[in-house]
Image (tube, rainbow, N blue to C red; front, side, top):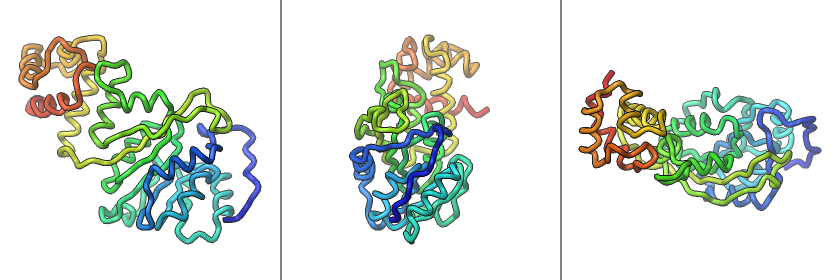
Length: 273
């Protein structure tokens, strides 16, 4: 690794807050349980604090960085590493080569996610059919929503969306002082482990429609929420809810993930349009 002067960044842009705490960096990388067989995609490597820890541990590392100044810096800093590819691109619009999408090549993701596009990036990760693990630093508030339990204010559509695709666990909390410039909020390191596909694409679309409809009118009972959002008859909705083991008087945040899965199965014949 070549020692270089740090790139001159007059002011943060693109939601940039650079991780500067090396102990936290090691915790992030260690929690990914990397091996010499692994292919890793690092989203937004910044100044390479995670990159330099990942490189010696993996078969291949692909860094996707949108900032041209940082791309040039990283290419100089890590010149000579044959297992590293730095791609100047926006991860959300980047189209990976077919060799990366092979099911025989499991992908691990590591990233300090930009706060303002956390959810779109996570959704794109879930679209990879060959991802296995993602270790992500997210805003504390978002992380708490992802990990929330029923009957709490943080429990919502994001919680259920994450549960549909993976098991999520908190690795550690991170204070704002671990970044430069300091953000106004604290962060959480999450480890996401992919789980077996729960159903077809159509099943997921129905699940998503039901969940979003239920939480669209959060203060209403789930009967009224589904009635307003889906336009279905209340008597029909009450019958389907009862048949799925759900009290019709409950609100969206009182219903467990497993019950939403049951509800999707029960509603499938009514959500074809």
